[in-house]
Image 1 (tube, rainbow, N blue to C red):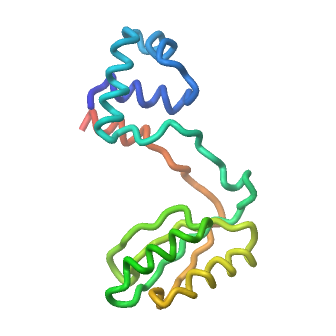
Image 2 (cartoon, rainbow, N blue to C red):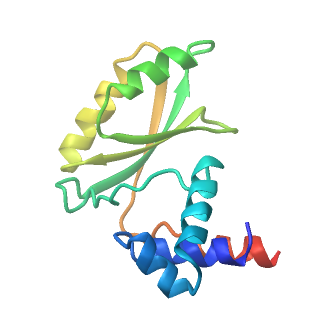
Length: 153
């Protein structure tokens, strides 16, 4: 990635509905250059989607929680299959340390969160959960500072 790629990605994030022609105008480069860069960044896996960012809070799920799971020995694949079936689980990461998986979970209420956790615990592959409810978001997901650091570093 170079400085133009960073400017391209930053502008695309700031204006997600922008067209290639307008993007080229804002960046001061040819439309073909923008198209080639977008295609290169997409093929290289840097750009992973063009879909809208959805606010789960405004979509009716105001509770955000992080649920750590301990998985029964040798049953990780089984646990992941069970977790995929729970729509309120937005993402799952394998971790080191005391817990095996970390899940980002949303719910309509604390009661609903308890139901989601009960569903997770119903899988014989899951031995234990530990839940932390997020009270506020101090720094929302961001990528722009990292992009700037990647080019200057």
